Image 1: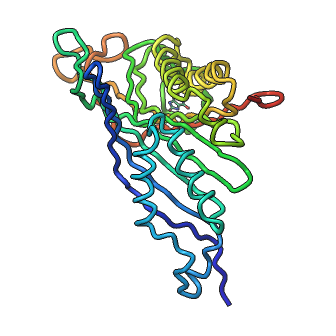
Image 2: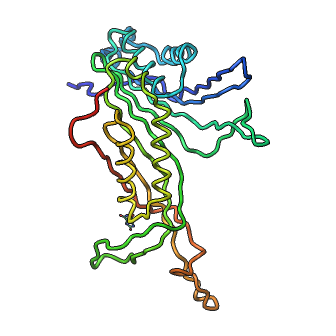
Image 3: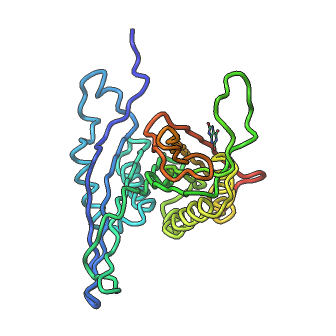
Length: 300
Ligand SMILES: O=c1[nH]c(=O)c2[nH]c(=O)[nH]c2[nH]1
């Protein structure tokens, strides 16, 4: 005897582009996303008995995504994820939960001759804005917003000393090092009971605040370690966003090694004389944390 213990299905990699045209000013605004929809519910028989009557085809899910994108704003992505999830759970009585993931790609307006261009954009980096949502029948909407692939580096203002030492330790202490990471930061919102409640939130302002705090703290903190700097980021984001219950970071420590060049005519390239470094692709440190609030969680 066997038992189906996990079943979700849906459409992944739905690529979506929407343009908003302001007829008065001629200014156009574009959004590009990659959407994943996964549904859960009374769908076991489609696996165990080839019963397709319970299957909302993944093609239907894709078509729905396009239609809802036409009928609703798709930005902020948190709001569109909530629209999509709510649709599937409300439309189909046997679908009880919808997982929606949206990746929003960067299209940043070009500045031409010092002025924002009305309809031209550039991909200024691989950074993405991500939303992971779960809409559950009778249990509301869970949203997690993320920044991913935001590559940063500071050439000084970072130290690492005082760490545990034993017979396995080779690393020297440093009071001045290069610090570089690819930021993956997430913030979990309180559960929204209704779509309207979720849509009342200014998710764009929250994303901007989280990003600004990340960059400002990275740049200005005299870093004792990745751990200490990321905790400061989490703490400030929780303070800035009252509806957020938890903030998490996952930061690779992308190492830059000093190169000893003394073998060549005694060139000084270590310690305070180090200017040429060898960037390392692997292995890398990986430092993670989640920070939550003490006391009761935020209420709308
Ligand atoms: O900020 C750091 N945290 C660590 O835990 C660590 N470990 C290491 O080798 N270098 C660093 N740097």
